[in-house]
Image (tube, rainbow, N blue to C red; front, side, top):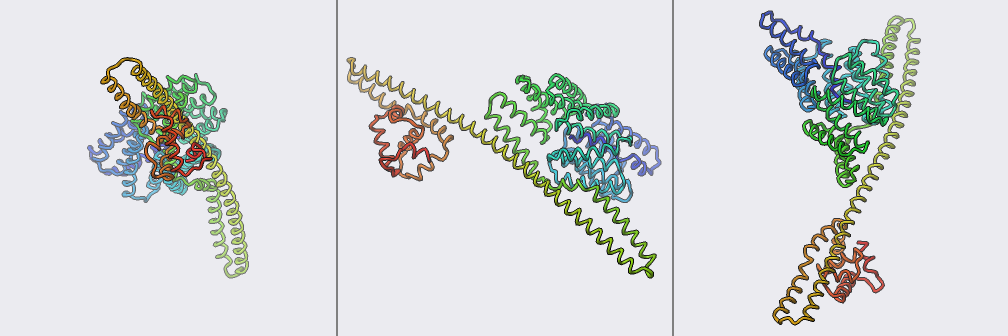
Length: 599
């Protein structure tokens, strides 16, 4: 659920009547500037212009509002400017703008119904901003504040918008069916009220969620409805978003051709109007379609485009989507090590976003309307009871006390019953959530174990390959040295030349494997990181050469193979193995390899 669509509902909640209330100066200059302000403000909200043009109009409106020193004008102008920043995907800038509006609003104060409407609007917007920034606790708090004010004003449009936003948090937390139930109730409340903006926001959420749960028929029904509303509202942004929704629906149905066509239409609108976040989502979705079709090269092309857009936007939720898509692409290319790295990064970021979210809070909204209704009924009953008490104060005092006690007892029973029912429902919800959490943890753990196994197998293959290479090299060198010795023994070579050749052979042997040993040690410690540490604990006085022999034995090499690699005699290796066994305290029946394997 994207923040811009909700902005389209709320951006006009600060009516122009607020501006007219401030226009007390009758001068021609003041009137001219006021008319210019209205003109630029309306142009900044017109989605037929590109975002850069609308940004220019909002800047001019802000400049005029500052010149007139009119707080309400300033709030209007900055509200439009923040809306444009959000459409461009610059949520951090938009967040700062609406925080600035809140400060001005608090300084103006809240005395009239219009002031409280403004307060409800700002609370809802800040809730949306915190939601996009990943702070769901604060988002939920601001939504409830806005809902309470809107309900007290009997403001249907704003109340519906708040419930709509709360349903999105339900969906994020995995309670999709409950979210759909709230949205369908909201749809029925406003469908005949001529509130197309509100109806669009509710409908687009229903469309998204039905796609998510693979209810294709319901998804297509609401998708068609919101596409008609988007065209009626003449909103390119909403049209592009609905097209993306249809592409997800087609992708779920494996109609790749229709999905690609729908995505390309969304990209055309996004590039023309400068909708950064929609363009990024389009690229990611197009890369996913081509990956599922097996066209990895095309998928890689659109992932590169997504990378450029992601870098310029810096939106955390979309960056997480990008990392997951990149990991899946690497996995499709059989680059499991790279895929594992990107999966870990995405999961780490996702966990950091969700770790502060308290799931139990979502159960509050389930009985919110019923509790409010019961509270109103109780207030009516209390007022009626007070009137009756005044009328029969002297004549029927005993009857009043009895009736009052009966009512209190009845209310107590109702409250206890509802409390028990609420606690039971809450406990069931908590059990379901804990079950989901355990399932998700198990899935993540299995994936991590599989990834670690792949990495360990890869390192073992490297180590084995290196050992074989070293063995081949040592054998080749042995052959060379053997050939040189045969030449020395069979040919008539001068004494000086003979000594020089023998010296070269003797000097070359210890140095020929120095670099190979360092590389081997690096691979070995990567696969068996605690081997040398545990070995030193068992035998602190073991020499460096003996440690090397232990490493070769741990890999399962024979005495002959070790002698070949180290350029030493078999007897020398056997002597070294005897010293190692002695230092480790092994008996004649103990197997050295079995012992080292357990370290």
